[in-house]
Length: 97
Image (cartoon, rainbow, N blue to C red; front, side):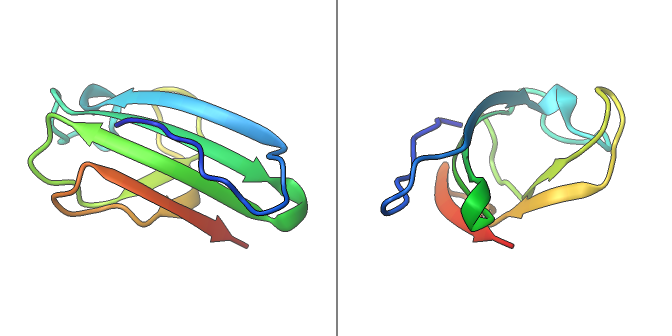
């Protein structure tokens, strides 16, 4: 996945997270071990908004993307679900709430 910034009108992000993931890190196991993803998440705390750009590679199909809160190697509760799936290689969107 490639990461790009997503502008929000009149706002500066409170935090920006850059994450690189690979299929070997997906829980539960079963993802393509050769797949990879890059994501840039811009958090706008005062607007309760998270914007992201997600890019993937070495995958034939992506079913969905979720961010979970957990210690490494374990699965935890979902904190952010993202609109990403299908045969595309890049997604850009914002979630509020």
